[in-house]
Length: 105
Ligand SMILES: [Zn+2]
Image (cartoon, rainbow, N blue to C red):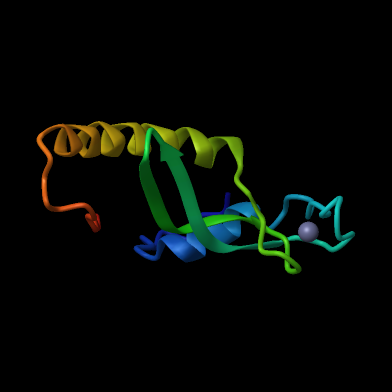
């Protein structure tokens, strides 16, 4: 990776650069080149749904189906596991709050 001494606070630019040289995958179903762009990661377990917006992935331009890279999935699952645990505890005490929105940075 090229470094020019500047510190980038824009995660989007960094993520785009990282994938710029990788071969673009083809959607097997629609025979279209996928696009590297932000999408929403969704995960449901035992009636609790976790949604993480603005996650970069290869997205099919036809149906919007996203393919997340293994690195991204590892990072997401670590986060999702913690959120699911918190949500299950809230469910256990029958909390009236059924939806949360968490933002970091
Ligand atoms: Zn497709």
